[in-house]
Amino acid sequence: MTRTKAPATATASAPAPVATPVSTTVALRIDVFTIFPEVVDAYCTTSIVGRARRDGLVDLRIHDLRAAATDPHRTVDDAPFGGGAGMVLAPEPVFGAVELVDPPRPLYLLAPGGRRFDQTVAAELVGLEHLASGSGPPAFSLLCGRYEGVDQRIADHLADGELSIGDFVLAGGELAALVVVEATVRLVPGVLGNAASTGDESFTTGLLEYPQYTRPAVFRGWQVPEVLRGGDHGRVEQWRRAAALWRTLELRPDLLDARGGLSPDEVRLLAEHGYPLGAYGTGRTERSDAGSGKRQISGDPSDRLEERDLS
Image (tube, rainbow, N blue to C red; front, side):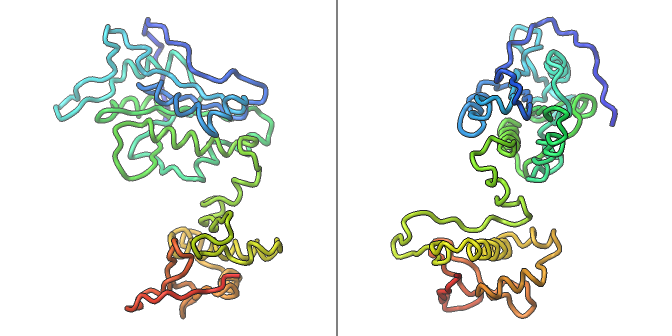
């Protein structure tokens, strides 16, 4: 779809964007447009995102959608044509706010009909291949809707696409924008302390992550699997792979379906680690009791718990 941009006609000057000073180390730029810039910025000064901004790895700029509003109340919404409940973000102030900044493209509207945001989309937005090419940092912008929605001309002629974080209704796009910001920022090289952290996480390889444990080795009688305490890194990796496969099979079998099910090697690995796969190889015959670390046999009327050595 071709996007058209009319010349900016707003006379109001935009406030200085809240941003990390641009550094030669910047690896990603994100611009966010919202009627609540202080709220979005407050979150983005904390934790991983805040540290990435302070370290100059991410150039995150928050812009007020009211910046181009010309009336005394800085109005950005109006009643919908044809009647109906609620108000709609009007095109004039939204186009004006974006055109005052001329942000990086693509500009994504956070909306329920958009492309489903997931780990794959996050990696695309970060543009790891783009980074590796040395052609400069990737960049994109986010537009937060509010009220009953936005004037369709914003979606048709200002935004380059739409993103959705799920099939549910929020009061506005701010929380969705923060989800996109955090999921993408943490993929930027150097943001996380351990470069391997993003490689083993849920969804990165099409599986849920394996279970994690820390001290003490025994807590209220529940023990950390022996294999994790033995120091044999090869066995640990095999156990983690099997545990990730089983956890995905139990909790999110749709993820396995999307990758074509379990391979023969994966079925064999699960069997070697004591996971019951059922007569057809990929069936789920038990479910985990996450609190106890035990697995409960499905359909057993006695709800008997069976302890298994997963090492």
